[in-house]
Image (cartoon, rainbow, N blue to C red; front, side):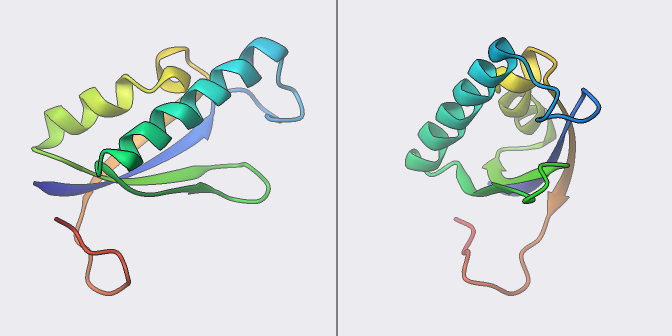
Length: 99
């Protein structure tokens, strides 16, 4: 297993202030998707900045293709509400221990 860092940014300027009810519903699905993946041990950490300009997801996957598959299956990414970038990540210090 490898660890990946995903940065997600809203695709809409001014989001969340400019968000629609449909977009907020999709963000709710996004949260549940990441919660289920956290419960399953795939997501190690997920969160966002207070100003919601970006969020990060630290997660495990077999490789880059699997990492992209996981992120593309996120409802907010699939719906185009969030745009992801992914990097393979090596934890050097911290309380999070990769499997």
